[in-house]
Length: 247
Image (cartoon, rainbow, N blue to C red; front, side):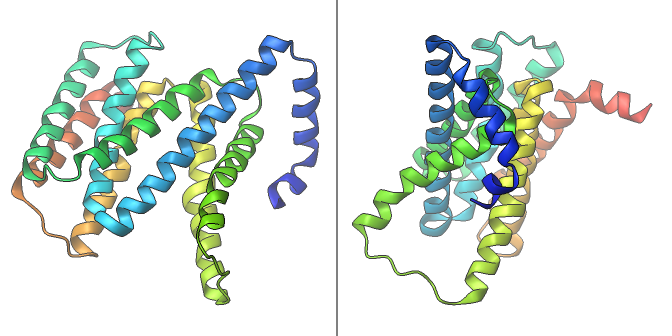
């Protein structure tokens, strides 16, 4: 509600643009935005469940394999070109993920569903160019909220009274969810989905470090080797960009 109030003019422009769409364009706009919101909601809800009920490393592994799925989908579905270096990097990622699976084969289904839902979300948003990214984000967040309502209806829910709860919830929602998601959607306007996908590896690397050093979860030497291979693949995949930055 706060975002809608602050960006009222932007929302009005988006609504005016929507009214001028043809019937086919209206169906496509609604379809892509609702699909994105549904995939995002499923991804968030499952991720929260895995982090709280399974373990952090499973959630980390999900985003470890997510960029591979995203990159593969972008090359197959979006017909994006891939260089030999990128193909080698993707193969190296597959090897790393396979090693990780050997070290911890449990809970693979959870990890795969999290990865698949976010990969499909990224691919779908590459096609979703009907509105500005702020409006798109608002529509998708509303969709996520609607999907969450049945949970609170079926379960007895009491609003927390502790102010600290709302403080940390606001910080997490703004700085670790909404802003990164908006930047991600904005990047998809001018960056190949495969590149955005491969950069998601930063997320599981940080999560993996937190699971080991903060949550004190056990670690296998194959997992360490897997992350080393993933780090090398990131460098190989983005070698041209890194060379340009170096110059």
